[in-house]
Length: 60
Image 1 (cartoon, rainbow, N blue to C red):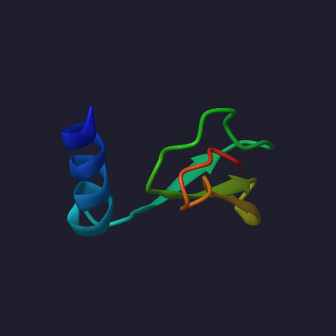
Image 2 (image 1 turned 60 degrees about the horizontal axis):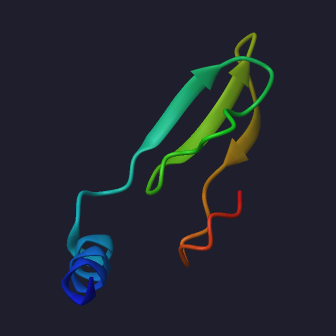
Image 3 (image 1 turned 30 degrees about the vertical axis):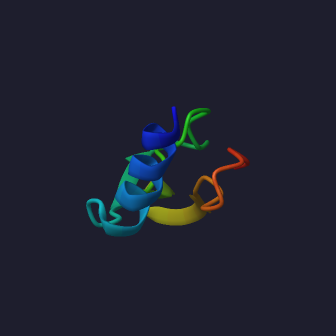
C-alpha cells in the first residue's frame, strides 16, 4: 500500500503530460480525466472548461 501511494505521487509529478481534450456538446462529462483539461464546444463556440482538482480530492 505504501509503495502504491509513492508510485502515484511519482507518476503525478513525472507522468505523461497533461492534454487539452475538446468535446462537442452542451455539458461536461460527469467523470473527468485525472490529468486532462476538458474544453466543451457547442456549435463552434467554446463555452466551458473543466478539470479534476489536482490535489487528488476528486472535485470537479
